[in-house]
Length: 170
Image 1 (cartoon, rainbow, N blue to C red):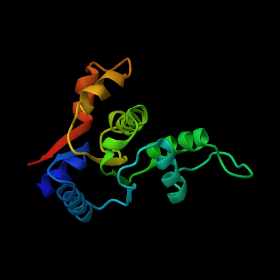
Image 2 (image 1 turned 60 degrees about the horizontal axis):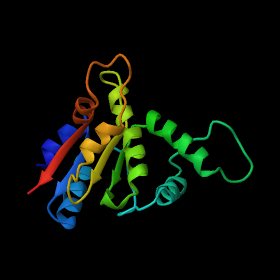
Image 3 (image 1 turned 30 degrees about the horizontal axis):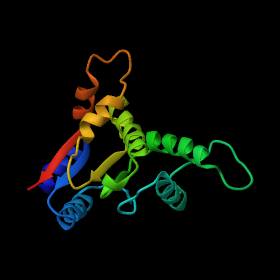
């Protein structure tokens, strides 16, 4: 299962569901060991965008394009972080993501999906592993908030399924 997941990770993001929290964590640990990506593991069970931003600030997962005295605001950090996502070739892990506020969960996942969707063949890009207890309609919810570009012939549902691989632990 781990080898297949690593192979899929080279093309898609992974959504790991099922099993127990310990089983999901063990699978993620094995995937990280087997892949050659620099990785950033967000704190488990993030609930708010502030939790996410705090980690982004702590790990410096953003690059401001202008200098400023003092601290950057939340919106500035989010903008800079989206640029970091588009320019980076790392593995981002968000475990037990079911607790995240729904609106921010969709916004963050959409940012990562955009990178897989818009990359050119062979181009390096960010990778994402998300784990949660169950799928709980996440793929459908993403399809409902996702808007592809005008040139894309695929439906939002096809784009989501083409960008995220569902890995179920039984």
